[in-house]
Image (cartoon, rainbow, N blue to C red; front, top):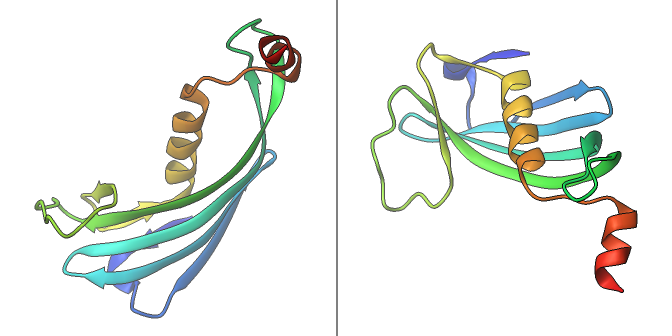
Length: 121
């Protein structure tokens, strides 16, 4: 789903994208200057190898996602306390944002239930 950033206004623009067992649902809203606020929920399951035993397991995903998208180069503003993603073609591909968020989550340390219980005993 490609969204043209100049069409995003103060009225929230809803989106929902699904990939396998993951749903990325939220809205885009004009913030100020060249900044668009993205607020979304990322939820579902993803297959991931356990970082302890390497067995693949279903990792539960239930994350709140919030960051800005800059329409062009982002000039640092000390009042902004969220991450900023830059777009240089005046649009944003929601599936790419979903994939990026998933890669960030999967890069964290996660272990399966079996390894979790053996670590806690």
